Length: 317
Image (cartoon, rainbow, N blue to C red; front, top):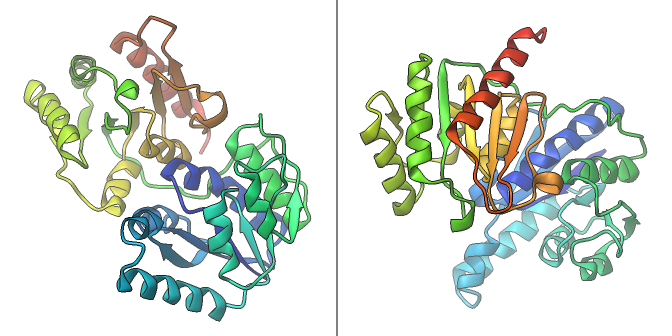
């Protein structure tokens, strides 16, 4: 059975889908998976060894030039590529109208959340198979339940495995960049955390993807010379460095979810968003939520990091 997963973005959402793939591989070994994803996150999907063909979409870019000839050629090429694979089923794990439209291009039956469960109920108009999954559940559990209903098995929710296992290294990756200003931890707190890490024989690593993040990364590296500053790099390269880290400390951003999915000791710092439904989950991940009107301190972050590192060292491989 050939199944296409449609989960186009964001990075955290893509990572949240990996445990559902692992469930399916255990329960339905007859299934092979392909994936349709935004071009910016294709390298993340490629981290899972069970994913075959990765179809790239560029909805974010296409929207900027909806009448451009190149846009139409790319969309037509995607339609041809999807139909050539002759999928038995498409699972729209996104639940948005845009993802449902992409899924429809395959010409195969589409399974997805029902009207009460989908993020955009209009998407269900394009589905042949619709399943109820409670919206108050964590995104990982919602997706695991959806896959189980669509493919005919009961996922074992007592276990959690993302299927991606990177090698480890003696570094601490500091993921300071995030999309919203109110999610950003102050630069001085990142600097203090880097100093504390160095005092415990860790090498801090920072990187950046835009000019604002570059200024923060350079400020950390300038204040703590032992810090390794990785220049702006392709996502696959950053993921490879991240995967070799001993410890990850991150803001509410996609790479923090990736670290958690790798099974790395990961401390997530949430300042303005609620982690209950979309926070990172993993065997050695933890979320520190700033209290109303308060903050998360470097001392708290380091204490939690030490706890996770001890937990990891005491856990049999």
